[in-house]
Figure: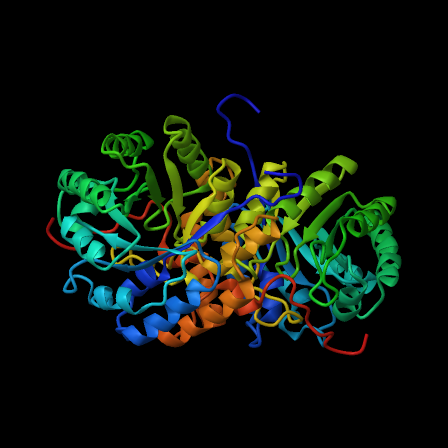
Length: 310
Length: 310
């Protein structure tokens, strides 16, 4: 990094998948295309576009194949999609996805509830997924749910997380997203987990996926930045949630995260003004106000008029 | 601090003043008394109880004198009240307030809008306030508004903040609250401002007063903790706001802050379970849901049932 150059932080937009999958009302494919084309012009390096799961399990994303064909791809963007198993990866390959995001949980109960198979079965699927990914030159990222706690089991020990990461690396996975699935992470836990994992697995590229369930997402992002994490998943408008943790609010909000990072002098490459327009469009799509602070209050630079003669 | 002893962080509850002052509907004095008596049993060392301002300017707190007579005082709690001028302090003295919180702004425009006088006039009032406080053995804290930015002027330079702090100390003030009045603070600004001021004025006791307008309150608290700040104002349920920054959400939420601090191993002395009951009572008083995460989602320790047979 040359003198005066800003430190880069990479923000991966996940609202089209992790956000929209929870929406009770189906967002039309043509509207998703408009959304994705706007997101593609916002400066993101990666967008989690959809999920190749069973349309019966997640009807909201049942149009994954069609959607991937319909969006206008920006060559600067990696179009990623979630795959829970080998069947999902095969569909993703056919749809010309550039990165597959395989998901499994640190806690056995969450894996069984979320993926309807044991963690061992997920790991067996991952072995095949990595192989097929390699054959098709598709990068395989693995998202590790409940890495900071499980809403059903409670505490997830760091040793347990390390054990799963060890299994992943032994399968050849070198790109891992640590997911705070239901907002159980807190700042010093984040510092400890991330610094330990970075130290133990220096060749793995770690991303942090935060939820704002208990208001801690930006504080956790700050703690992670302080130990050298520079890749974050986030969701436009803070759209998202978790069906197994009622009352839980959404993912960390992209525009709030970008706003914080840019104020702190990081280079996210994202155009906040444009992004706020996309977030407004997302509010129209889902038909309600989203839990975004900056969309509501405006960025810090907003100047308010003097309310009376002073 | 002996080995194994937790580090203490002091949380000062401000909802009865900074929260309720913005409520359009008058909360009955008898209900405020119930609220304050519940807060008095929550473990706070200090509660900002009301404001001795003109009842015409802030009708919501027009019952300050009566309220101070009616609450049941816990000897472990310091009952503080805001005073904008000497007249306010005289009323506070009569009401047997234990600490007066004088307020002025770092930015001239905000001082004129909020207090209807120049900053120099406020400083002249403060001189008298300090004197009368000393005569009556009442501690004088000074809250410095717009210390991290002004919603009408924009950026407030650190040199400007230091200039005002210098004036305060020269008047004998040794207890200062740095207020992020409209949520313009960001983490490294907080670190820089707090560490610089602590270094320049080691004998001053600094408190941080955060707003969550742009979702940054807990991240800012974390940044402040990291440079040794251990006193925070916060508001039950996140109640509050600022009339000069439309769309702005409230103060940092007490239960969210306590929840974060206790997870991080700090000792706040506050009973979170009891506090959540008080926050629910506050929601009843104001007749709406408040922007509290932990009140909605429950603390991190909440265990959710497994939704189907796994």
